[in-house]
Length: 317
Ligand SMILES: NC(=O)c1ccc[n+]([C@@H]2O[C@H](COP(=O)([O-])OP(=O)(O)OC[C@H]3O[C@@H](n4cnc5c(N)ncnc54)[C@H](O)[C@@H]3O)[C@@H](O)[C@H]2O)c1
Picture 1: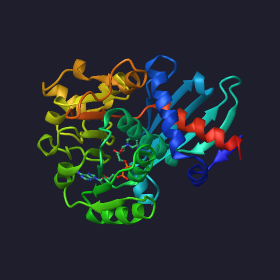
Picture 2 (picture 1 turned 90 degrees about the vertical axis):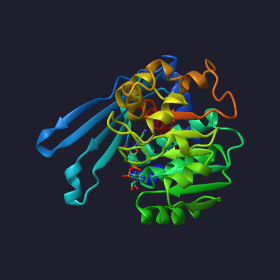
Picture 3 (picture 1 turned 30 degrees about the vertical axis):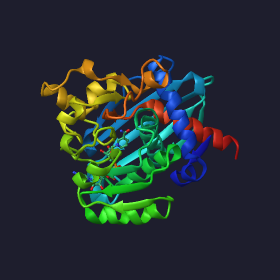
Picture 4 (picture 1 turned 60 degrees about the vertical axis):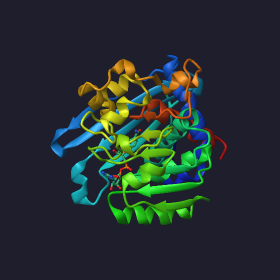
């Protein structure tokens, strides 16, 4: 069995391949060709820890993966990360463990891939300006995956902590061949962007309806509980909303839950799962002016997809 560190994952896993695998994974889930139980949560009360278990079996990848995510808020006092992730990869034919990988980079890759797949099917083809709100750990992976499917003319970044945005501009400018600038407000960014990625820990909206140009595509990544929302409920209610999973969205997608709870929309107004569009069951973008939102809360199948790519590259080493 191989033990793989985050730095090795980063070195050997090509972002573009993860984007392609995640796209296939979404289709597998929607067409019932993957087994993906709802994620389960366990508390470790003594240490105020939370453990999330995300299993998935994807026959077409010939893989069974289990991601274990731990959230330990008190780790801050010990100077340890509050969130850790480990991915266990099994051979579904024999049940033997093939690899155990640190899961931080794999999570970044598969979450970035979600945005890239959404952009492929929902953004305008002539999108030029990409805005990203939130410059934390996930932000780099969002841009690396996005630039695997399109070439933006300009990337605009904003974070509530100005210093983080400044540092992010410098770091990404050395990684991407594209103009990257800092915006001093979410509003300024939203008013000019063709594609907006929200990847913050905010509980209150960072994008308002009146800031958005017709034809904008939004990838809403950050909120994963009913109490969190990055998008103005009026914006959500008036857009074409696509989710990664309807079932998961009802439990976790605060952006939609809050719009529904305020009576601004109904669950039936959610247009599609991204898998339905990938499979050709439903159309993606239908005109140049519609505002599209891809709301992802994160599925175990994305981890299985990233794990599959990792496994392929471990074998070829
Ligand atoms: N959908 C998914 O599959 C998925 C996967 C991984 C992480 N996430 C979620 O994405 C979010 C970001 O993750 P991360 O690891 O980058 O977190 P992080 O803590 O490293 O970064 C979050 C950033 O958001 C900024 N921010 C917070 N409130 C803001 C606001 N109102 N306006 C602008 N910026 C603001 C913070 O300053 C910080 O830089 C988290 O909520 C995380 O749980 C979702």
